[in-house]
Image (cartoon, rainbow, N blue to C red; front, side, top):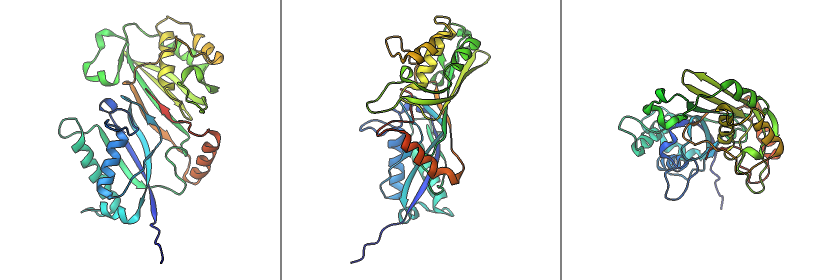
Length: 298
């Protein structure tokens, strides 16, 4: 008796979401999560099990403008998605967004998660391990007269004017490859060594935006970096304090983890397609088993 093996296609999803109404990315029983909702919608359409791999596992309350995920699907199941569209991928994109909007807690005519594109992935592509870097932003308003209730779900309000120059000088000392134990919630068996590519703050009126880029992030790393720099910005700590904590690998009661709601995954960078597989293999080799190399937020 001959067994037919289904041919699988790897699909790349580019998506965005408002994390306010989600308990993070990762599926959890009985909780509303981005992965749970997206998986349910895809499986409803494809009538086939879906296992998503994501570039950056955001935590509860954290948003994303440029999230990337992939999954493998049998070609036969993909045909179930075509509907009245000209092709299966267009049909899948339209139908999944319709289901996501229907499941949204937002007013009619909007949705808190949107899939911007679904396309066949290049050979060797892995949303998580092929990534070169992730970039997050964190938004803070430091003028009580300018607090905007309409932006409260994505902005931290602080009562003291921040010294952006001092924060940037402090952040410059953290760039490069280091053991970021002082800025992470370590996991058993996982490395806390990361390469911080950018960490800066810019002011536009009463709003200060932090931009943080690294090859990958360990748990709560961005929010701890921001929380630490905010102490420099309000003058309660010296510019040298963040570097001292980094070098001393200090994780104590003075760790400051900023709230999650102003944190947004802006983009994920990848190499050219012919380097996808090599990059994925290199990343896997560098990380220990079970390491959440791409986790951020809280």
